Amino acid sequence: MSKEKPSAPQGMRDFGPDEMVRRNYIFNTIRKVYEKYGYVQIETPAMEKLETLTGKYGEEGDRLIFKVLNSGDYLKDLKEANAAEWDSKKATRYLSEKALKYDLTVPFARFVVQYHHQLKFPFKRYQIQPVWRADRPQKGRYREFYQCDADVIGSDSLINEIEFVQIYNEVLNNLRLKPYVIKINHRKILSGFAEVIGGQAQLIAFTVALDKLDKIGKEKVLEELRTKGFTEEQLNKVNSILDIGGSTQEKLSFLKKYFENNETGLKGVAEIEKVFTVSQELGIQNGELELDLTLARGLDYYTGCIFEAKIIDSGMGSISGGGRYDDLTGIFGMPGISGVGISFGADRIYDILLAQNLFPDFNENKIQFLFLNFGDEEALTSLKLVHELRKNDIRAALYPDPAKIKKQMGYANDIGVTNVCTIGSEEIKNGMIGIKNMETGEQQSLSMNDFKSKYLS
RNA sequence: GAGAGUGUAGCUCAGUUGGUUAGAGCACCAGAUUGUGGUUCUGGGGGUCGUGGGUUCAAUUCCCAUCAUUCUCCCCA
Image 1 (cartoon, helix red, strand yellow):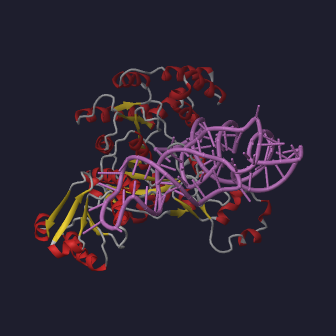
Image 2 (cartoon, protein in one colour):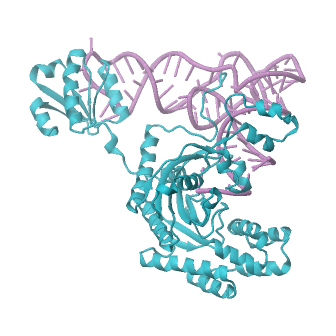
Image 3 (cartoon, rainbow, N blue to C red):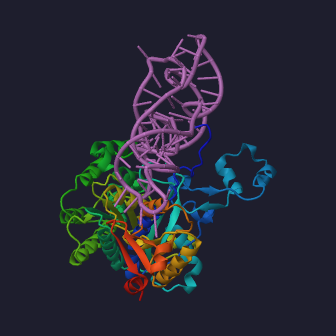
């Protein structure tokens, strides 16, 4: 290829008509469930002030924020400050004051603080919008992707967590994404572990290592913690945690004993237990909801229950995450307001549905009647009928150009219309209309009046 | 931020142990069928083999660099 082909930026995609139909199916399915549970929709801008986003996602997250270059002479301040020796981090605040949003939760927290005087709490909102991450793209990972968030803010009740389990169940069932598992854990259980072990300062290192248990195994986890400075005594205590297995009930009773003298851990256990028992009463099956003590989740702001949903054997990472954050609005100057929310990754759901052939047929989007164009005179008659059909909310169209009939038929076939209608000079003379069903190939001739009484009200 | 793979027609790819005019399937256009598609048949257009440099009598093929892209780790939806 001698010339550079035009293309979208790395990790960002175009969506053709077929893809949009499928994507809207996902969005609508999720939207319907959210609305049924009483969530209302909002949107926030593509960009936020850089200061709104930085520091909310941990060091790794900050690195992945897409910064937007200032307009105008963005080097002016740097020149005046003699900034030649600066590193890029120091120079950033002079070069960029806006950034593409990294998720929907933090902009929502900003929204809540900004409009709290006119919001009614508990405020239940949903939001379906793209977010951007300057990540290395790979399978199931894009630089621009859609999140479908639902959050409740201003309510401490565990009812919210329990409802999110219901929402997960309903959305995943409606999309026919089975089998799935909703993993649940509690930040206070993780904190409790850290307190018992005596490595409170190393909570982060501990949870990060714990998170890898599935992937790298027990020995490697212990090894990693050893290099992070955990003593042998601490490692022994970690060891007994890593061995926890069995049913959720067994895990819970182990934890109750383990946290005998630890208030934080006990609180976490009690909350998880309640979510489990009530969910079961509401029909959640064994295996659909699982206490996963290795579930950590990176986002720094979670403080209570944390969720993750996975489609078993999909070869895809989690398609949804979420949790409770007690003080997200605190960083914007409004402390003491608790929130909890979840987020579906629409693009990963799309990939799984496509790979497993789980999209339904979308016939209702097809054109019902395509009228062939036999020339200006004949087309006018067709156009009037098309107009009538459209008035009756029937999808109809006239081929705009008097092209060869073979070409028009080919077009009808390619875009998948249901029926082709012919009104040429013959038909006009006899007051007839030809209808061909493109699927069966059947062709019939109807009088105009029969056609109208059959399809028009 | 670290590592690996791949760049040949619009798409998916074959091929050349370095040697005259670089192939297939699909897609596209035309005809067989001048008012009838999806099947079939015939014909056609389209590539300086990602880009730059090196080795060589000769490079699409070997070497180096560069860019693009895919995947893995990190992290995450």
